[in-house]
Every structure is written in C-alpha cells, then in structure tokens.
Amino acid sequence: MKPIIFSTPRVQAILDGRKTQTRRVIKIDDAPENWKISIAGTSIVRTEPYDVKLPRYAAGDILYVRETWADVFGKYEYRADYSESENTYRVKRYGTTIAKWRPSIHMPREAARIFLRVANVRVERLQAITYDDCLREGLWDYGTDVETLAAFQELWQSLNAKRGYGWEINPWVWVIEFEREEVEE
Figure 1 (cartoon, rainbow, N blue to C red):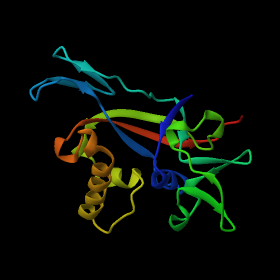
Figure 2: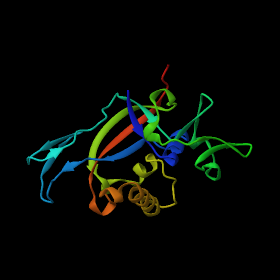
Figure 3: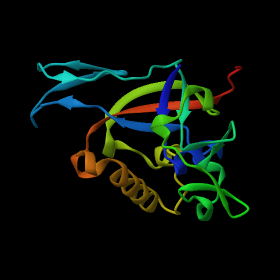
C-alpha cells in the first residue's frame, strides 16, 4: 500500500465521487528542449540518455490518501469534513481550540480513511487534457469546456508553477485513474 497526497478540495471531490483521476509531473533531470522519447502504453522509452523517473503507481496498486488531519483525544478528524469557514488552523469545538491541523505529509497510515485502487496509468502532455478529464480531475462543470479547462489551468498553476512545471511548460505527466476501494483493517 502506497501513500498519495491530495489537498483538502481534492479530498472533498474524491468524497463527493467527482474525482477519479490525477496528474503527476514526470520528472526529467537535466533534459534539454530537444530531448526525444517515445511513449508506448504507460512506459517511456528513452531515446536519449536522460534520467526519466518511472511512475510511482501502477494498475492494481492500493493507495491510501494522505490529507490534512488532527488527532483529537485519540480520534482522527479531517479538515475536508469541515466547511470552508471552519477550515482554520485549529480544530475548534464550542469556541474552544482542541487541536491543531497537521499537514497531509505527516499523516500516518493508520489515520487514513480513503483508499484508492489504481485502474490505469498513462502518459501524456499536460495540455492534452480533455473536458471530460477535467471533470474526472474533480472540477465542477463550469458550463463550457473552455471555462472548465481554464479552471483546471488555474488549479494546475496554483499547485505546480512555483515548482517549475507551469501550464505553459506543458510537461509530460502521469495520468493516474483510480476508483474508491473499501479496505478492511
């Protein structure tokens, strides 16, 4: 079982049944603009001697979702269960702070409540995303494919531009398709 991190809005989309797909950047070390690869199914075949990271997930893998959480007197609470106005830095009940929210990166496996089975992994350029894929990414239908794609671009920029993988770069991405899975403890 492997971890995967999602932001609070993405966790809410998974819980709502709207998010069944995610994109993760394929990291290519020191590759110039004219590097060459060929794509066969879910694998990248290097035709130039550059270091291409392989996918972290494969079809059939079970993933546990790491999300923002808190330990409240031995019981786990999840930020995604709170309304946006309640999404402060601390868990409050009856006006009293009872715990601090902890970042998803520090969430232990035993606190996980959402499990995903990887259905498929494929490779594509980021800008090849379709309107239907935007919906599978958990976005709301903004009325037109152009507006929905613009919403995805904005989301992508907010998560990846600072890391050097903005929309305009059009990086290669792993497209990971998944479905919710019930896991017995």
